[in-house]
Length: 212
Image 1 (cartoon, rainbow, N blue to C red):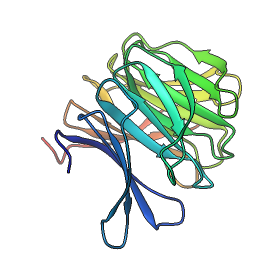
Image 2: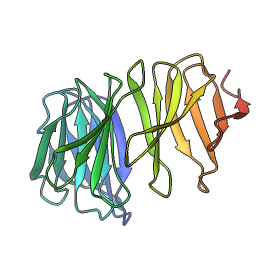
Image 3: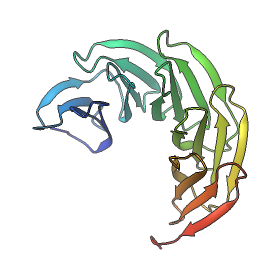
């Protein structure tokens, strides 16, 4: 039973389990077939904002308002790594090869961590406001972030070099995603629009206003 709002859900790579996080400071692993609780993890000291599976399904990463990211075993709940990330970690995701973890938070910085050692590899800076959303391209070579500075930005996932700035939204860019072929990007915003962009040139292609 969750005592507060659920903040994030994620399927395991094999589809047999569901990971959840909640503002009640817990994360849970559930049987996807019958909903039975398998593991409840309560190592954070503030609301857990995000949960993400490693590509092989052997580990889970969580980020929290306590500024800590944890890597733990979904089969036992045992903590593997703990590292200080941001004042408040909004989202965390694994690189497609499972070697790195990317975290974003209210300080506007994207941080890249070694998943084995927990060491910081890279800090990607450029946003003028907190980062609200992050996603990988399908080939793993780029990431896109959306921010409270009303922009989305595309970065080289290896070097952190800024590739594109997508301007047009008039409020926080709260959702971002690459198209499957990598040629287009879609963003969603608190300005009540979603927008489709050219992933190479950065030009705006379509404005979707169905939520206005």
